[in-house]
Amino acid sequence: MMLKSWRALTLWKRVFIGLFLGILIGLGLHYGLGPEKGGMIAEKWIYPFGEAFVNLIRMLVVPLIATTLVSGVITMGDPKRLGKLGARTLGLYMLTTFFAVWLGLGIGTLIQPGAGMGDLISSASGSIDAVNTRLEAGKNAGGIVDRLLAIIPTNPINALADGDVLGIIFFSVLIGVGILLVGDKGKPLAAFFDSASEVVMKVTMMVMNLAPYGVMALMAWVMGTKGLGILSSMGKLAFALYLACFLQIILVYGGLIVKTILRLPLARFFYGIADALGVAYSTASSNATLPVTISCAEHNLGVDKSIAGSVLPMGATINMDGTAIYLGIVALFAAQALGIELTMTQYVMVALTATLTSIGAAGIPSAGLLLAAVVLSVIGINEAQATVIIAFIFPFDRLLDMMRTATNVTGDVAVACTVAKWEGQLDEEVFRRKSVV
Image (tube, rainbow, N blue to C red):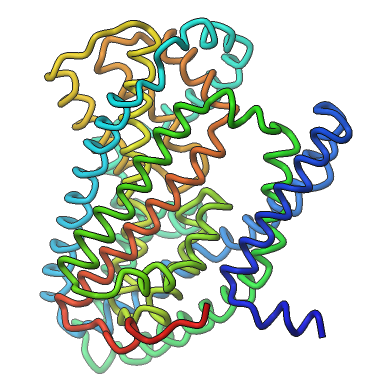
C-alpha cells in the first residue's frame, strides 16, 4: 500500500522528498559523527549511488540528442523552416542571456558579495593545486573561436563517442536535412530514427523513476562532506546568485516570455517543468537533465516533438543564462574582494565576455566556475589572483551550480514554448490543462 502511494506521487514530489531526506541524512552524518568521519561515509558509501544515477542519465544524452534531433528535423518537412526556426531560437537565447548577465551585474553591485572577503580568500591557497589541474584541463578546450570551429566534427563517430554535443547537433541536423532532400528513398531511415527516438524516451522515463534515490544520495553527499558551512562561508555570494537566478526565472522567463509574449498561465508553466527543475537542481547538469526536459515540454506543455527535439538540445548546449549570471557576479565578487573599482567600460566588457563565454560552457557540473578566469582577466585580475578566487569558491560551487542549472533549464523550456507557438506547434490545450500536483 505504501509503495503504491509512493508511485502515485508525481515525479517532482518524489524528487523533492528525496532532496529533503538527503539533506537530513547528510547533516546527520556531518554533525552526528563529525565532519571527518561523516564526510568519509558520505563520500565513500553514499556518493557512488548518486554518481551512478547521473551516469545513467548521461548515458542517454548522446542517443537522445542524435535520435530526437534527426526525427525533429524530418517532422518539419521543409529544410527552409529549419533555418527560420534556428534563427528564432538563437535570437531568443541571446536575448535572455543579455537580460541574465546584466541582472547578475546589477544584483552583484547591490549586494556587494565580495566586500570584506579579502582575508578569507587568502586562506584558499590550500585548494590552488586542485583548481590549477581543473583549469589546465579547461584550457585544452581552446578559446571561443576554437569552440565555434569545433562545431563541425571531423569524425562524427568520434563526436558520438566523446559526447561532443555541438558536433552531434550539427551532424544530426545535416542527416535530417539529407533524409528530407532524398524524398521517398529516405523514408526507411526516417522511420528508423522516429522509432529510435520513441524507444530512447521510454528508456529515459524508466531511468527517471530512479531520480528520487539519486537525488537523495547526491544531497546527502553534499551536506555530509560540507555541512552547513557551505551556506555560511559563501552566504552573500550564494544569496546574490540565488536572488538573481530567481528574478531571471520569474521576471524574464515568467513575466516577459510566458505571460507577455505567450499570454499563457504562469503557474501551469512551472507545474509543467517541475520534474525537470527537480532533476536539474540535484544533478547540476543541463545535459543530464535533457531527457526529462524534453519529456516535460512535450507531454506537460504541449510543445510539438519537432520543436522539443531540436530547440531543447540546442538550449542545453548554448543557453547558459544561469552561468552568465554567475560569471558576472563572480567578477564583481573578485573585484570587490581585491578592492578594484570597475568603470562602466569594464562592466560592458564583463557583460560581453560573460555572454560569449557562457555560450561555450559545457552542460556539466562546475563548468561555469572553470570559465571564470576568462571573465576575471578583462577587469585586470591576473592568473594567480584568479586561481585564488576560484580556489576559494571551488569547494562550495556545487550548491551554486545547482541553482544556475535550474535557471538554464527553465530558460530552455520557455524558449521552446515560444518558438513552438510562433511555428504553430504549441498545443495550448495541453499547456492549460489542469495539472495533477
